[in-house]
Image 1 (tube, rainbow, N blue to C red):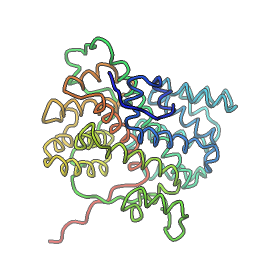
Image 2 (image 1 turned 60 degrees about the horizontal axis):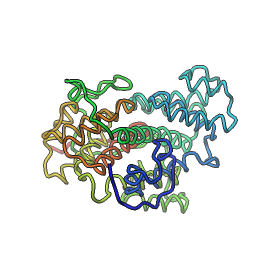
Image 3 (image 1 turned 180 degrees about the vertical axis):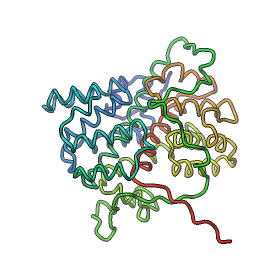
Image 4 (image 1 turned 90 degrees about the vertical axis):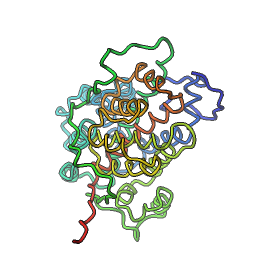
Length: 389
C-alpha cells in the first residue's frame, strides 16, 4: 500500500491500538480522513473525561474492559485493564471483570451496568425498555444512562475500527487462501443470533420515540442548544437527539464522526456506504436505521433491488460481485471482528476496492455498530398511521 498524501495528525488512541506507526502508509491513509480521526479521538476524550459526571472513571473503564472481553477484542481489553490498574482500581475486581465474571461484582449499581453492557455488546436487539428500567431501578440517572449507552456503542465502533485497520495492515504479503466455500459461508456471530424476520423491515419513513426523558428545549443550556443545532437540521424536534443531548459533548463528537464518515467526498461511493450501513442495521435488527439508510441508497443509486435482497436475506444479498463482497464484509466485521484479516481485505481488493474505499467501508460498518445500539436501546421506531380508507 502506498500513499503520498500529507498528514498533520498527531498520534491518537486508534493509531496506538491498531499499531499504526507515524508516517507509515496506513497511518497516512487513515489521516486522509482526518475529520473521522479527530472526532473519534474527541469521542474517546469525552467519554473518558475524569470530570464527566454521572459515572466514575473507574466504572467507565470497567465497562470498557468487560465490553472488550465480550466482543472479544483481547488487545483492547489489555489496554483498558492497564488503565484501570494505573488508576488504582481493585485488582480482584479488575480480574473478575477481565475474565467475564460479572456475577462476582457485589456493587448492584456496577452489576446493573455490566448486565446492560452484555446485552448491548452481544445482543443489542434485546436492549428494551425493561433493560433501561433496570438501570433506573439501580439508581442510575438518565444522563448517566446516556453516557453508558454512548460508551458501549462507542466501544462497539472502536473494536471494529481497530479490527479493520489491523486487517489492512496484515494485507501486505502473499494473498492468503480462504477455504473453497468460505467466500459464501456466513461469518460466525458473537452470539450466534438469528436476524429478525424480513417482514419487520421497511422502506417507509418511520418515527422514533425515546424511552427516557428528553431535554426540554425551554430548559436546555446554551451548550445543549448549540450541539443540537450543529448535529442535524431536525435535531431540535428529534427525540433521538434530545435524549442524547443530556451529554452534549459526547453527542457533538459522535455527530462529527458520523457526518465525516457518511458524507466525506471521494473514496467509496456514498451509495455503497449506505448499502454497508443497511446491511449492518439488518444484521443487528435495527428497523429504524435500516429504513433510513435503505431510502438513502435508493435516492443515490436510483434503485432498490439490492436493498430488498438485504431485507430478505443479507447473507446472500448483492446484484453484483462487488455488492456481494460489501455485504459479506459488513456481516463479518459486525458479527466477528476478531476474524477479519488479510483474506477479508484481499476479497475487497479482488473486486476493485482501493485502500481509501476499504477504509471508508470499515468506517461505515463500524459507525453503525455505534448508531444501531443507540437506536435499539434508547427508544423504538414508530410506524406511520395507516392511510384512511
